[in-house]
Length: 343
Ligand SMILES: [Zn+2]
Image (cartoon, rainbow, N blue to C red; front, side, top):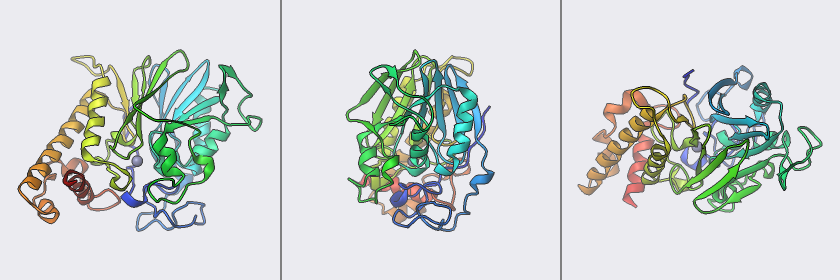
């Protein structure tokens, strides 16, 4: 049941846009494959034809889909379907086919955990495949007749960044933008006989992160506030900070009720990587805390970024999370921690 997904590739200034993982320069035009962001800067171009969507039942009404971008969470029941994040548009057909194997009900809600393209670029395709609920009544049905499409719910900063209103990022296509935003700490909803909490964590991975807690199924979908494949990814240019990230990990830990002495209890679907439980999140939080504290101490001693890097504050965790290649290298992580602690 536990299978690593493709590592999330993203980059601070260019996290945003639809395209190949997060690793695209924001301003470039779509390439031949229609990927906004242009050539893939050294990383091999993804062959979306070869990607298979893996379906992993979590528990209760909740299922995890693993493809090439961020993990997708599906909650299904008599009221219809709700999903968290939408991956890449090139995979929308396969994602819909995987959803259809879970349920033939209409897709009513899409929740975005944050604005990065590997979690939101499929919004438009999937939104059009669904429809919204108005006044508690189901309107229309799956397909072209659905006038509005599914509602896309996110923290308001997700819309602000996708529309280019903040951050100076070029706008992503309007069809991918959230349609229903919230400000403040939380949005609550009831769907499929289950309370769902969309909890905003300020200035963590970005400035618009939410985790989604399915209270009855007892599953948390974390977006990139928790991943198993890399060091914490902190999009400093989009308001991310190491201390906010740790607050997010703490919030996830606080929501989890484990079954002591065995695996189980609350399950956690990370932004990238395998299905997890409390032990996984605790280990990740401990690693993040230790590295934060080390770099904090080095800053107190007056060390420069270069000196901090040379001191290798991550080295005992590098076999698990470190890399010198790809988008989120160990150096980039150390830089992001240093930068946001220095502020
Ligand atoms: Zn992300």
